[in-house]
Image (cartoon, rainbow, N blue to C red; front, side, top):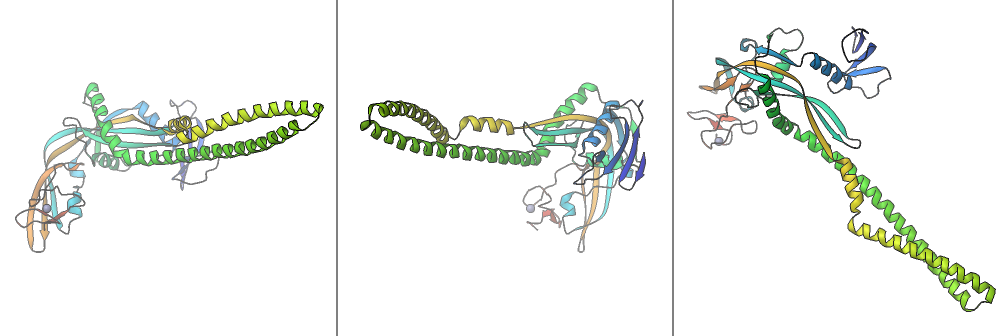
Length: 356
Ligand SMILES: [Zn+2]
């Protein structure tokens, strides 16, 4: 592989044991709107990147790593970061080792028609408590960046049956995480369905108008023929009678088609609605791609706080790479501290911004 700026020249040998296409490629890093034929894009959502990942996963779908707390920075919780209080020191006191699985899922949101999205999403779950560990997947990704040697790999110790259970258990929180993206795609798809239905509705109404005009013309012609029949000679009369018969039959056909169209319009075109909605219905498929066992440590973290002249140390449950593992509440109102309700003060009791 040869790197030239944001272009990577890649050669995959013919005898390589991989399902990736063999030969010479130019990979373009990042996203660009227009791409020349023959170039392949490389970014986390590009098909080529996913092929590479799938290939790597096929060869080594399972692995284990340990996160050494001494190499990871202490994660300050949101409710402290957002507070007008300084953290002068933070210390982690590990008590015991725990295991988690980081599961990388490929998510595909599809409709039968055009809307389709595919992306990768990781989630970490504790092997014992099955709690999801929000920061651990990111910590793991950060630590595996090239040039960092703060993680050591080891054989996986979790049993296969347990891994399967945990992968299944992590699907639900993963889908909850991506719900906004699903909703957004769903809205796009239903907007497309509405537009299609509106187009159909307009076409049908146009057809109705055309038929109504045709019916008017037939009606006038039949009236003309009636007059001709009443006062014409024998020969003309026969022809007029014949034409009137044909025109009346046309009139019946158009009337019945028009009645059908009007009924469908009044009912809101149920068949077409069903067909269009089905075609735009979403299917969300999440497929596990890789599973990594992560050993991490749990214990307490001590945060030393100062606010003006006041000082206090608070101790909360903590996991290395995970962050604070317990909910901390305001001692005044009992509400949990969050990004939107950060710590406001700590004179004797911990108080949220609103109670301070
Ligand atoms: Zn409060």
